Amino acid sequence: MDGESSYTIYSIPAIPGHHHILQYKELHLKALKTNPEHFATTYEQALSLSFEEWKSRIQSRDKVTIVAVAPLQGSLVKGPKESDLQQKWVGMVTVIGPKTLQRFGFTPPRSVQGHSGYDLESYFCIVGVWVDPDHRRKGLARKMMEGGIGWIQADDVPDQPVEKRTLVLQVTEDNQEAIGMYSSMGFNFVKADEGAEDKRPWMYLKLGD
Image 1 (cartoon, helix red, strand yellow):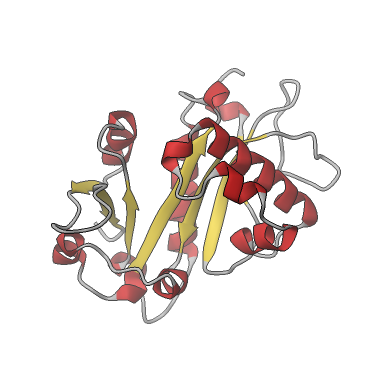
Image 2: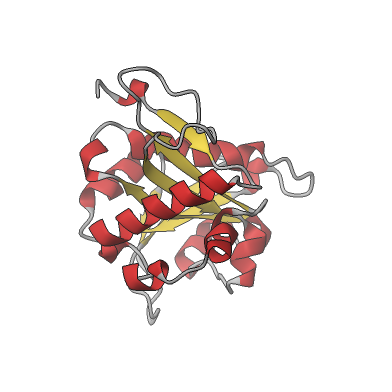
C-alpha cells in the first residue's frame, strides 16, 4: 500500500445489496474480534445475528456507514460491485441521524447542550469507528469521518439548516490518538455528565462553526 490515496472511501447505499451486507458482516466481526473494547456488542452476540438483522443495521435513510476499501494489485478501486467480492473492506464509520437516535432514547449530555442546545432534531452521532490494524496510520479514519460529515451536510432539511446541526461521539479517555485526531477536525472534548452510567467522555462538533 502506498498511502491513503490508493484507498476508496465508499458510502453503503441506504438500500444495500446482498454483497454489501456480507462484506459489512465480515468487517464488523473482524472489528469485534480485534478490538472488543470499542464496541457494545460482543463477537458472540454478533455471530448469532441473522442475515436480516445484519441487513437492518445498514438499511436506513437516517444513518449511513462509510467504509474504506483497500486497493487491488496496486490499481485504484472504483467502488464495491457485486462481481468484486474479493475487494477488501478495511475500515468503517457509522453516522446515526436524529430520528434513529430518538428511537434509542438518546439525550445529549448536559455539557454539550450548554453549547448546542437541546433540539434533538439537530443531533447526529458517530459510532463504530474502526480501521483494520494492517491499514492504520494511513489517514483512513479521518477520511471516513469526513465522508460522514459530508453526508450530514448533504441532507437538506429546510427546517433544520446544516449550521444548527451538532455531531457527537464518545471516546475512551486513554485513546489519546483518537482524541487528537478528532480535536484536529474541530471536535471539542467534554466530560460525561456527573452521575451518568456511561463514564466515557464526549466530543462534539458544531457544523456551523
